[in-house]
Length: 267
Image 1: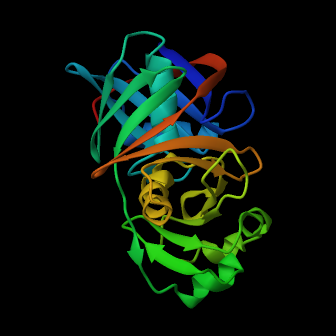
Image 2: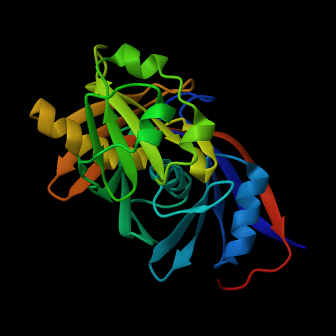
Image 3: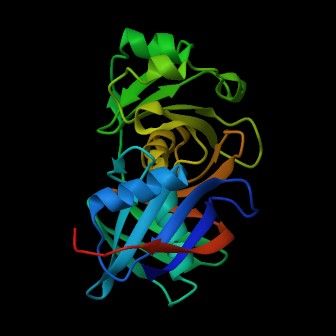
């Protein structure tokens, strides 16, 4: 068995441990088999496990939940940047299945440059409305998820969806959102993705690529703060820049270990 580089457990989009969204970051020497990365993610059983390895002057990045590979993952990217910025100066370029993503330190935050994922008006399947257990003011959808706006921050906080029923709805996930009444945020949200093994996600960076454009249009400004009202909670700073969205947040390293695996081979 060969000794691998560190496996780091990071809490993302938070400034204190045991809050925000946990991710595992595994820094590999070279690409690994997809089945092996999926097995590691299932073993770790975190909302996301990120695998990074050097590729030319950049880093290749892939993300896995315990049950499936993700097309894009904001908190896994933030956690990966947090780990790599301990080893090198920024900016850091990640090559991913959605193109190049760039991370750089900005004060005490890490800023990610992501493509915007705007939504448009959609009809909600009856199964979705039954599962989510509320009557939204607006329903929209992008290529990944449904967006439901409800009447208040309290309505977002008090939501108790039927996750088993929601698993039958054909979508990556569902974000439920409202304008914030609290002073430290512009909007609030929760995110549910049971089809991908994540009942309620703690803080969902990729959802803010949709929530940012959505609330920017309604609030009339491009710089926003989103707070996710999961039990762990977290904060995402959002800056709209044309077809791009800059997501910023903090990270905390919770623990670091070593991962052993028998044989690396290119995927």
